Amino acid sequence: MTGVWRRGFAEFLGTGLLVTVVVGSGIAAQRLSADTGLQLLENSIATALGLGVLIVLLAPVSGAHFNPVVSLADALLGRRSATGLSARELVIYLPAQIAGGIGGAVLANAMFATPTAISTTDRAAPATILAEVVATAGLVLLIMGLIRTGRPAPVIAAAVGSYIGAAYWFTSSTSFANPAVTIGRVFTDTLAGIAPNSVLPFLTAQLAGAGLAIALTLALFPHPGHSWPPGAKPRNVTRRNQAYRSGSC
Image (cartoon, rainbow, N blue to C red; front, side, top):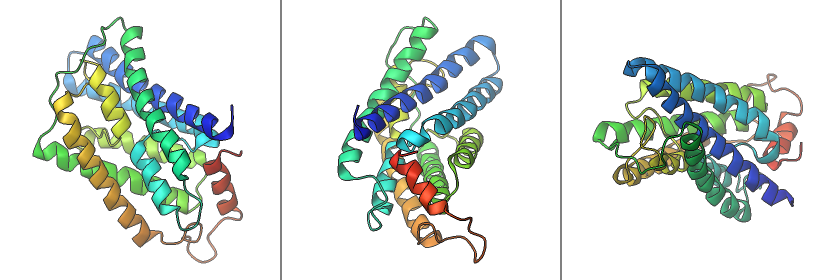
């Protein structure tokens, strides 16, 4: 398997397993707990931990995006310095992530002997759309800021997992913040599901949030690898960061 296709497969696998964690833990929570607050707690803890593990595992292969808006932000922000995803990689990453998201929902349903069905849970409302803008902007800003200051993959994994775990609670949408995950969750009529008529508003909000995050990243971290205070930047962080992003380590 050539390098770019190997990275695409890693994105398919990682996104799929992420949705499996989200949907599977949601089904388990529904079966184990009658209280909706406890169900959300169980779902959020499993998702935060699972996401962190997947990032650590697959960051050396593909960068562990698992999210189309993260891939788009990486391509746009890295265009000038030629450190972001190329157009060819982007064309491979995005379909792989979406296909993985759908496959992950189907797998979770199968593991719990739950029929795969289109969700009937309507989620789109003015408050939840605003929440998705905020959730996505925060997530993309966090990832891009950590990458542009050369943080290693384990630090990014812990930070991103923690953010998603927290965002389950501080956003009214429970922080989908990911178009591939949103589309995947259409295919489960369980706690984690989202009805098809809510998808387009959520995707629109996520793209808007990503755009806001790109602007904030350029304002706060204008120079990749050079955003540390004087004397505080660890040695070789830029080289290590580029190795992780290219899947060469």
